Length: 228
Image 1 (spheres, helix red, strand yellow):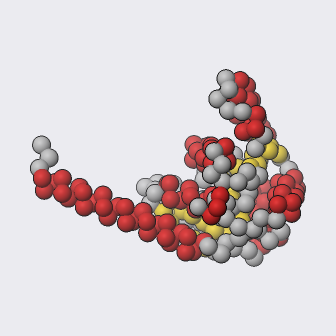
Image 2 (spheres, rainbow, N blue to C red):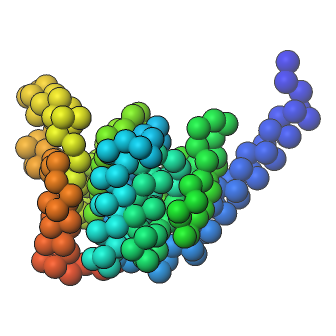
Image 3 (tube, rainbow, N blue to C red):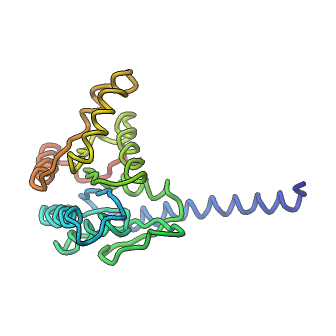
């Protein structure tokens, strides 16, 4: 049986947790407030530096940097590291938003601006808030979670409909077939939701999509509607 002392201690711990969460938001807003315009790149932590996908992601980060975009990633190894490496090579701000985990995730050395988070949800806000485009490289559950989060925010008009680019048709076509056939077929989503996605295998096309959208909308600012 839990006694009153244990209940009080649990209550105190929850109160301090709330302040730690607020602290993560405050630090993120403070350190990232000048990172504009920026592109967030998601992807697997498990891709090795000698793999072609790593080189392609590094090239995307570098080319975005040449266009004047800062690059934001989850700050870990694999494709996150590759994107940060390319941005750093281009001399632009290379942001790594690391998540503290018991295994796998360690901050990569190519982030010129690095933050670490205890909570996924505060980190996810920062990955979205300062971005004016999203590139989704192949990845696992975390990447899928981040993709669907971005799409949900756009669907519900919590953020503007920025470009969402899926890189690697072999990887993503099955998912898109299921999304358009099964999910849209049952009217759980609309064609407008699917139209938010672009799939490509070309680094040049990635850069052109983002460059064209940015020129047309002339948006250099926060990803969240009305700055929220």
